[in-house]
Length: 178
Image (cartoon, rainbow, N blue to C red; front, side, top):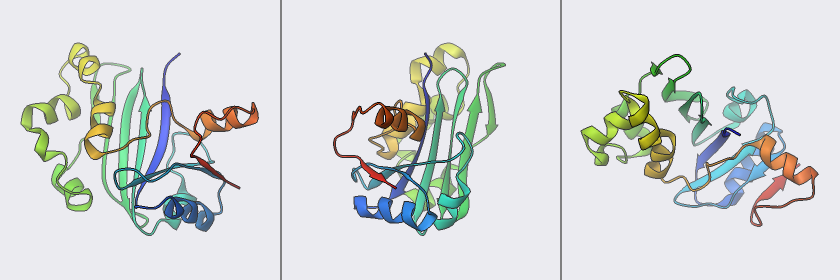
């Protein structure tokens, strides 16, 4: 089974900030504890499309992260409801960077985390040359780890809601907002 992860990461130091974001948006969802300056939020909504209600309710820095393991990965950064940086790469028909990243713009908002990697590592993450390099680098994971995300693997509202409906709780510290 392939991974299909979709998550939002609010630049904040308290879990309450994620709960408040869901409440302002009028959405159900899951909120993970703050870690490394990010709060992971999984809102209900149509998968693999930016959640308009959540983005509109955002009053901070919000990172939207997608990893479709066998197909591609992408992310977008919002300040309030305004998209300020994004990236998209797919590999269904060869490796194609559909939306290249403006690293300077990204770091202007998120901080100087990517440029510390050096030119070659940045290239392998954001401009992979072949499938061997792509799968060896695992660019979606490398990006998530570099920016400090803790919760991003095999993660989506759908995954957690399915577990919730089965009575399974794989994440003790996660808050369900109704």
